[in-house]
Length: 238
Length: 303
Image (tube, rainbow over all chains, first blue to last red; front, side, top):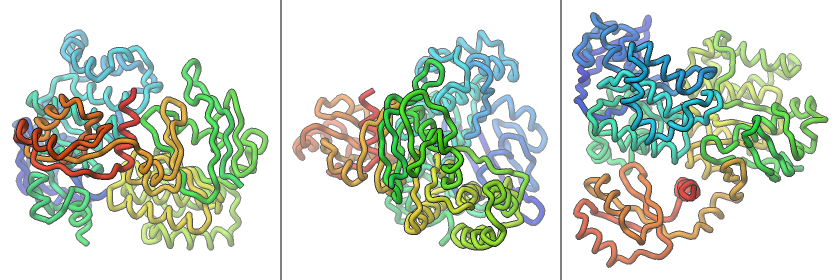
């Protein structure tokens, strides 16, 4: 679903993303790990068609990020730690807003999203103002908003930052369900137990890949008992 | 002197109660953790301690001063780091620090001395001309902490200070907190990271606006009444489904590549052997001591 060849992004003299080669398959949960400033968010922004690479190529859902960045937006959903919800709108109005942005009739979107709203316990709060919702609810509502146009690819940029241990587990159960249903999920996180839930991860440092693979294999390769230890070993290169 | 004495505090937002009749004494000089799920009332409590929220019932004293009558005196002696980054993104590191120094009436000579001290622990000096908005997540949080410390407060209140901070920078940030404590500064901190909760001297577990438990992390863990085991194997989803059906198991939770299971009674090695025969994915088991995350999840499972 996502392929990049020597993907590079420079800002002046600074190389934020340095020759990245990725091949992410349908239904995969792929994790981006790295210290703050390692290049995770820049990579995700390129793949979402929000910024162009300086060199190299990338295709997302079959669309080239250089030539077809607008089409990419029809095949991806994006959710970030800075939940892009309107606090002054009701939960349902936020959904309606996203549906109209993606030119989805609200009735059809709601019909399709209904089972998801049920499992997430959101049905009862649809008429509440978003600003009154606890963090965990806002986070789930953001996820549903990102799914309003049924995209095959989902980008989650630190979706669980500031979320408690229980809510994080429930969120990951949902991510798993989505992957089983065939969605490709790209996720960045600072919780290393969550890194274990990814099918594959890339560890980035200074814009470069320092490790990539299945968490179990990576732990064996780098003789680490868990991903936290692996991260501390690799992410700063100390 | 207590950092805070809270008596029968209740706060509601309209019809919605946020804190219900809370009484709490927080000793000065400790790292005191406020731990609870989203929506438990942590931020409300911290904002009330900072004199930023009116409350309907009860009383709060901070550093022996009453939050309503002595609001100004409290603010001069208190540093607050709110949940989300609230510095001026367009100002440089040093301009932000100077802004907060002026706001708190820090004298020029004092400011220079303080700045040198803050740069020493934050290691932000090489970046003093960088716009705050261009800092990495970890550096932003160190700057916000420095701004909260510019007027040399006796007590600082930090609401999820490691939000969005990577594991390496989190360790660094907590090392700074331990240094500040050694200087005698009281610290009240909330966090969703249970490894951070374990580093507090005392934690208060808060849920639905009420205090459920208070104690040293070590004591809370020692008093935990359940037997705990960790298991792993080839297919965690399968193991999870299998174990969920076993009546001996009280609670089961994913912990990265392992599953923690808790039980009221000891689970014998015979039982584990039988399980491993019935569920071939299940490969290993081990009795372990609980961590704060186990305690937290157990507490939440009673909802």
